[in-house]
Length: 86
Image (cartoon, rainbow, N blue to C red):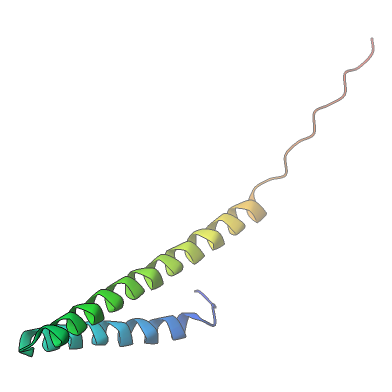
């Protein structure tokens, strides 16, 4: 279970950005002039890029947690034994 306090905020922002991208598709579909079409495509692009950024942040955090867990649970490296004099 992930106890990242920002996880809920990222989920909400992801939903908002997906809705913003869908709003952009509706604007593009109903636009009758070039500026509204460009604005709709800009919303689609912004929402998509922002959402992919949130997904990347999530998987970066998961990988960092995995690496920290692997580093703390691995057995300590054994020191080389000094050469014994005969």
